[in-house]
Length: 280
Image (tube, rainbow, N blue to C red; front, side, top):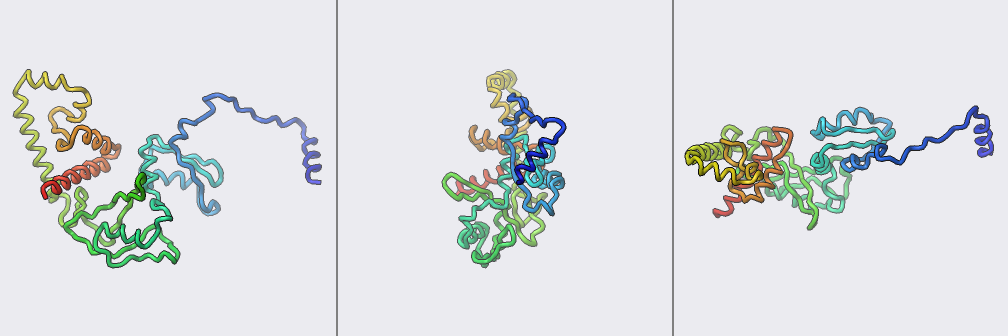
């Protein structure tokens, strides 16, 4: 009966309804753009606004102007990124960094132990978990850096970023993450400033050799010039090898000046830690 009614209604149409044929041409396809996209869906579309989510997520991800959102349906959406680095950073910041297969009390203890001596873990593997974080009571050595992120190797070929938040700690030195001083008194920055001034004096003193300096400079390839930085400034990370310098420069490249400065400070802190280990 329903099929007969549907056929009768179609027969009553004034004109035939012809389908839309999409040409098989590249200009009608976006395969290349979709390679840097993120697909998802709203968990509760009756209460969640698709347009508001598309407007606000770039701000939460810190990629405003470098991503655009598309509402594919009432509950499905797509975000297309301009840079692979932004997409990877968003994936790394997911609340499910640790697979559910590793959600054990021993895992949480190991994560807290990386910060200090563990007194208590507020986690019950047999109870419901209503938050996207685990609280731990830890004895922290204030002489050590209060790091906000650490790399967790969950397997031989997979690593995730674990974020730490310290309750009731409002002030710390962000270049070295220590609590014993603020940025103006940071010994790391002071040492860096002293070293830069020393390098500048050395450069100015050695630049009087005239043609010899020019010939050496002209003989260097362009990549070497990039590693040395602009004329009149010392090279970044001179303690590292050339290959390590290239990797470090790639890591610190970022559009946001604040994030770039933070990454430079992390690299220099890592260099100082390596020096301390070598001296032990």
